[in-house]
Image (cartoon, rainbow over all chains, first blue to last red; front, side):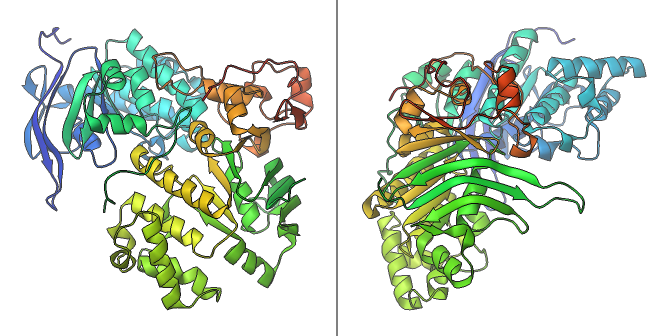
Length: 265
Length: 331
């Protein structure tokens, strides 16, 4: 296993992403994430939060800047190091193969990445499903026969199968019904108690972010607006943008307000 | 009794079977609710609860082969019996619908102006030049600063928040009396949601329109409506003044739904509801929520409770009187 490092698990340095049409999605973003920490990236659409997550996961390339894992560049690293960072997406229906049974989808990953006997694989699949609150019966189902919450549990089990040190969760509970969202949120909170795993939790939902993260970054239009302990940022935001985000969340006594500034295009 | 704009009485909707010899699927078991002129009513539920299907039934837009029983009265006229010109007139002038995803409901190949005036021109209510004039005035009302430029643009050139304002203008243009808003801000960012919601509420108030506001977001609904109906698996389980339902929920489902939201102000473990939301056709004989309810007894599993008056509202629960109202949210 990897030796415990003294520095941060993940370092992002001067990250910049410019898309083909000169849209700057992420601009000079720098932050660290320590081993075992849960860090949230908060922002609205177009803030660059998902682009940042995708670059760290290796699904997109950066225009400039570095992503370091244990102080070493991630770019172009082999399978062993790629395993360390896994990602769960918003829509489990879009990230699972509709023609593959759930158990097989997890077993396939294990076969590619680990040397295991068939029996060992089967017991590992059962263990992973159990860990996310599913059982053997679900292993022989196709994704379409599962509910949204169950599918998201499968996506989490698949990510955990590779024993990642960093799990990137991109709006992972956003598409779920409220009553089911609480189940998956609690599962994620419990997993972090059981495993030595770090989260990069990308979300627009401040209430969810408060429950699941130790620290958070607030992004707007590709730039870092504010960062700090989640509680400090949400209770005493220093930046007016963060205040605006907080004020827009419906709550008791909330009155929707028109924006002060002119109409955005 | 004050005259209602919309009065839904014991609505039940069954869809045509999927296969030739399959069974009809019930999507709404029992919905009764009314909207008075100038009143905003929230219809809150999770996926599969039948809230959008209720709106479709009101518009007379149920899928082919669907059977609706009960009554839907619009100004004392039975919507379910309307046909031809009467139905067209009701849809064109009586009621307007605002959908969740404006991009999916606006033709990408036509300009914003074409989209806005198509309905009123087709129904003969206005001629095109005056319709465009009225649309521009309304766009200005909802905070679009340069309407003349906007109506000449195509949908892809507008942001989601702006497109939803275009949708609101489309809905208001024929001067309807009733607005059905189906998750109108769900696809929007929170700051944009606040903006769009403010505009919608303002227009509803100024024109004294009735609104049926359909959403999964209990907090949002409680903030912008006068009364709340909570729907689960095709049944309205609780109905009452928004502030009361929110502050002291009496149906176990409403209480559980409120408790399962992550707290926006402190770190506390959300109390999840076991299982998953079921669809109406999966519900058995008993109470639709029985399988997930911590108070359920044998009676709940065999007999479906009718809505009954409790305190300021109605609650469809056998134990509505005995159960203490849960700790809700006070505004």
